[in-house]
Image (cartoon, rainbow, N blue to C red; front, side):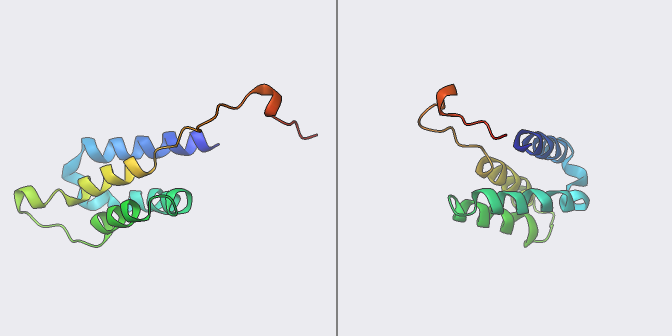
Length: 100
């Protein structure tokens, strides 16, 4: 199920990165992603998640070229914070338990 969430959020992020012209109207699509990242990665990466949420939600849109892409920068930062961590030790079949 977690893989499904990751795929859905990756698709939403890709749509928002591809179409920056409608970015100011569709940033509302990132609210579930922000909530999911806060719940899953908030304790491990609090500064990254907080700064990304601030860049996306708190700063209004303006039309000064290099500074107007703060929402896309926040989106990429949030996407990097949502990356799943690879466990240090691989899980073997003998360690798995089957619940009846």
